[in-house]
Image (tube, rainbow, N blue to C red; front, side, top):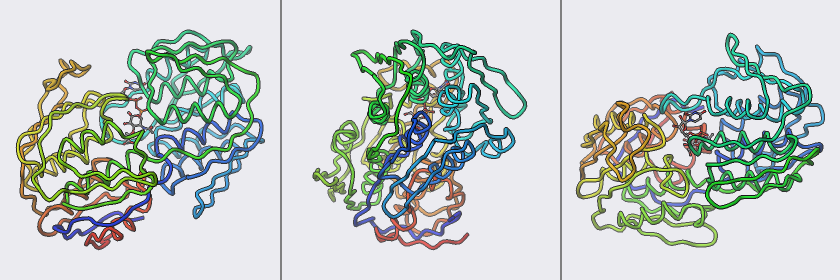
Length: 440
Ligand code: EPU
């Protein structure tokens, strides 16, 4: 695995990359396979670390997994789901946040689950209180232990309920879906997240035999059933990876065709890209994103839950904003601490100020809590190479494209975290003409 790169900047990224299944759907669809009474086949699966982590986890629980990396086909056979040793599960602590989603399926199959202390990107506290709250709503008993949490289902099984989320959390909505489909009776979920990846998970569960109705106003009704079968499904393409390459094209003055990018899931991003002055060529097999050769426009923007501007699009776009002529303002309303990556941009010559105030139309949850969650980016900056260390997945991608946009040499360390969500990252950079060498 690549961990450090020496990047020679100043060359526009030009060429084609392909995106496969979404990092934020594939692991969840893999977990859904545990609910089936027969094997499942998931297609369009990328070779990313998160898939490897979930493969290891479900294998520990007795699922047989076969992954054909060439074709992207992954089969999961849950016939022998069994209890795993806490110590073995704990070996995966810190790798990912997906283990929390195993709760529902394991509670239904085994009556109990153990969740190690969780990992994921360092972009805020990322608590799991909503998850435990909804599991308790289904009747589960939660017990904090050393190194993790033990969860038990009541003897007579989990029961559907009316559940209202205080915030439309993606993971908690998935937790409810993966638990409610085999719970007794009906679950009414209010204030649910409705991201395209959640709609795709609902499609997977429907193929398995679940009855799920998506109503207006973030309401989802799940009618529990006794038995689900395996599924065959093509994972929706990774809109976050596609948007990252699009921002890389703008930041480096490049021209990238993203094969597999899907217009419908990205329309909010495409509007913003166009307002910044980026060129678009939307085709059925993908989208070409290109720098027009003229000055880019600054923007006032805030992140939000779907259908708002996705938080995962923010970090790479900030690099492009450093290359726009004028002042851009970005209010992050999903995570309280997602601007740490801008320190490296400042070191490279960007002008970015991060504020505690809500600098956007929405008064968000972080307004009076002292979190530095609004950024003012003044361009156009001449970026220069620097030695930088990657903080998290999207921040890491942003650092690499900033180094590619900069004049001179940058040494970028901690790059391996990028493989959590970007398939064949180094090969794709090479295909786009990036000048770099692997130094570790
Ligand atoms: N939150 C809580 N308590 C909880 C759960 C969430 O306070 O129990 C808070 C979080 O701290 C955050 C907000 O709610 O401030 C939203 O979190 P959410 O649960 O929606 O996020 P998630 O399910 O943990 C997924 C993606 C993230 C993406 C978010 C928002 C996966 C594996 N991760 O995280 O993806 O940013 O939804 O869309 O699906 C990424 O791809 O780089 C990434 C971080």
